[in-house]
Image (cartoon, rainbow, N blue to C red; front, side):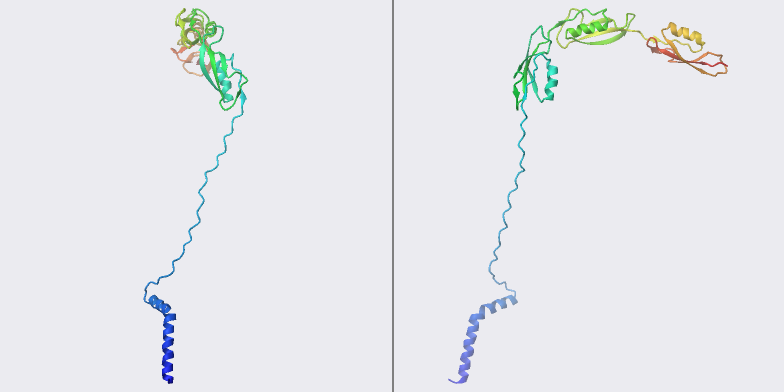
Length: 265
């Protein structure tokens, strides 16, 4: 075999080996140059770590109220007992009432639980009170208002009062409603009309002289107050130029009337 044939065989073998060994790589490079997508090994994406679920804030456990002994309410009125109970977060529940002639209406007769029992989470005390009694309205006409009020208060009866001008002694009961002898339910109010001093109409003293004006005011049940003096060219000394309150005004007995008079020349 000559040298030419040997060289040909060597070249052929080399070409085959290059094609076998480097063929795929050369093909891939050619595809990239021509813009043909090249299959690549898939990229493994690592999943994100799971986030822990948010936890609700821990609520502190409610503090249990300290136990306290039940106060003694028997013998007190339910109104007063409730004032005491509020300060200790105790609730008083009225379970009923009972006719008890020798007890004050509203006075607590029984309580449950009794005094001294330890009250824990439920601070409730149930009570039975004395029932208010019907009262017969006494005759109060002609009595002083102080005596009339004391009588009604002793019966547990409420009252209102209004004044009326009268010649009777001030503070005397002139009339009442309901009338004497009528039985009233608890909570009923008796209306009293009380005598009051009548209002006085201020007389006209302007244009009179001071001494005469004072006499007129005194006879009317009024007083002359401080005297204001001013100079005046037309009228003589002590001539009354002005009065306050003015003539015709209605004022209580003993009201002071201020006079303005002419000063000495």
